[in-house]
Each structure stands twice: as structure tokens, then as C-alpha cells.
Length: 161
Ligand code: HEC
Image (cartoon, rainbow, N blue to C red; front, side, top):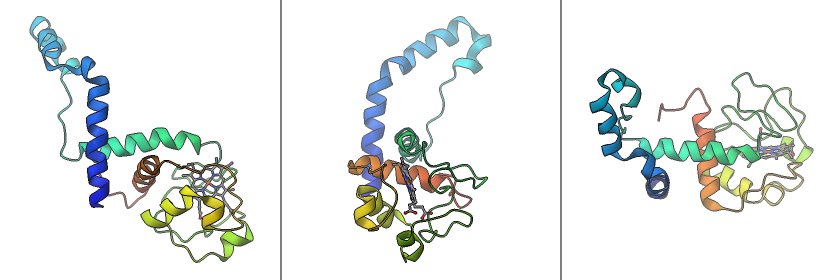
């Protein structure tokens, strides 16, 4: 958790640097002064205390684009080539009703949390030998962390972060 917080702060720094030129406060001020009526359009969004966490989730959403060919995270529970991943944190591996898992998954005792998802995404067939998830390995640790933050947010239990 602690590590994740540090990582989130690092990402925030990177993204602020990357798009800083578009968000320079003095530019916003100029527009507000000239066109008071449009202030509501150009008003900068107030940074929230959890901006770092939101940023991590946003990065995870981007990284998750490599998964959407096989996985949906929609709350409707619909599966594609891979099982639906809405609310996957806290779920036992291979337990989504209506999806036909490999024998290896069906027999697995793994419960998905940050640690097990990290291990699985690093090496899906190594973590659950016999897994039929043949694509979607995420070698980059920071990308895994972001994806897991994103998946954590796709849940009824998401703590409104
Ligand atoms: C080529 C299709 C494909 C891609 C791409 C893919 N997956 Fe999968 N995924 C699967 C399949 C198939 C399974 C079920 C494996 C089995 O039954 O052995 C699975 C299972 C999973 C599970 C376990 C779900 C459960 O109900 O136990 C998680 C978590 C998961 N994938 C996450 C991801 C993430 C995150 C990505 C992107 C980084 C990804 N997958 C990319 C096909 C894919």
C-alpha cells in the first residue's frame, strides 16, 4: 500500500510535467479576466487529496486497453473470450458463474487480491499452470500496479477513491 502511494505520487509528477503547458494557471486567469461569462468553462478543476490515486486508476484504464479484446469490466457481468472482471478483487479464481474456465482455473484456490493479481499478470501461465489466458501478460511492474488499481475501482466496493 505504502509502495503504491509512492508510485502514485511519482506518476502524478510525470503527468503534470507532460501536460503542464496546457494547464498553466496564468493562461486560465487571462481567459477569466477577458470573458467573465465563460469562467465556468475554464475554471480549473480543484485538485482533490486523492488525485494521485485517481491518476493511477486513469493510467490503469489506459493500460487495460490491452485486455479489452478479451475482458469486459462492465457491471452487467457479461464475459467475452475471458471472464468479466467487474468486482474481480476478492473473487475466487475461476468462480464467475456462466463462464467456462480451464480445469486449472476451476480447481484453483487463488483469491484475487493485489498480490495474487500482480503475480498472475506478471506470468499468467506460470502463476496458474494450465491457464488458458495466453495473452495479456504485463511484464512492467508499474503497469501492473496501475491495472490493479483500475480493477479495484471497477467494483461495488470501490471506496470512492
Ligand atoms: C487473449 C485473451 C485475453 C487477454 C488479452 C487477457 N486475458 Fe485475462 N483471461 C483470459 C482467459 C481465457 C481467462 C480464463 C483463463 C482460464 O480459464 O484458464 C482469463 C482470466 C483472467 C483473470 C482471472 C479471472 C477470474 O475470474 O478468475 C484475470 C484477473 C485476468 N484474466 C486479467 C486480465 C488482464 C488484467 C488482462 C490485460 C492485461 C488480460 N486478462 C488479458 C483471456 C485474456
